[in-house]
Image 1 (cartoon, rainbow, N blue to C red):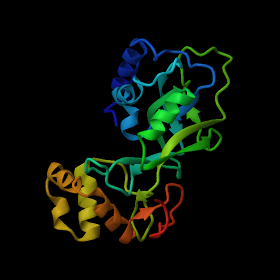
Image 2 (cartoon, rainbow, N blue to C red; image 1 turned 60 degrees about the horizontal axis):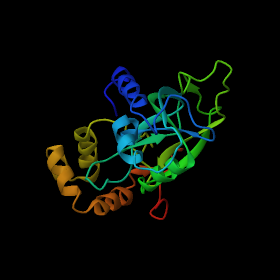
Image 3 (tube, rainbow, N blue to C red; image 1 turned 60 degrees about the vertical axis):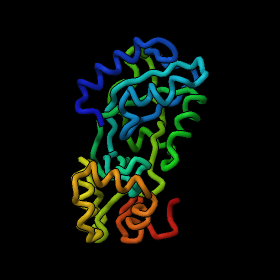
Length: 229
């Protein structure tokens, strides 16, 4: 996640000046996609979407979304780290990047997220605070829905209380896993652990699931072996 909203806002300003397909007013037919994790970094979206052959403008804006918090997905990414994932429960709020994307860009972004499903939620349940584009007209009506990517594996959570693990540094989440899995090697320096896990990320993902450390992104119910993907 970007270090601060101020730095993110500056990056977004630079992005809008980068030329096509980026702009400051969404194209007709665009959908609002709220980012969690690496997609909240404008440079990541630039890398993922700049090559897409589409005339639709990509409009980025910092927003605050309520009734959503951020935890860790209950899986190991290809590069060996435990990635972020949204939790659609509770009364928390996040400040992050929202992107107006056309259909072609959305399809391209979907293809980069094999461990996540794009889910549509309502702004009634998860109000978006702040105008998702600074140059939209004053009479602009906020969208009734927006999309975000939820983990197919669920989120890390305490197996007894169901409380999710708050998003944090890799050192912290790996130490949490070390205690729950009784595996001292996970408490080694994070860079070393991630390098080892990248050799077989599915193995640790399976251990997490088998130990009952995964719960749904929308409830406290634990995921069984057959749930998810």
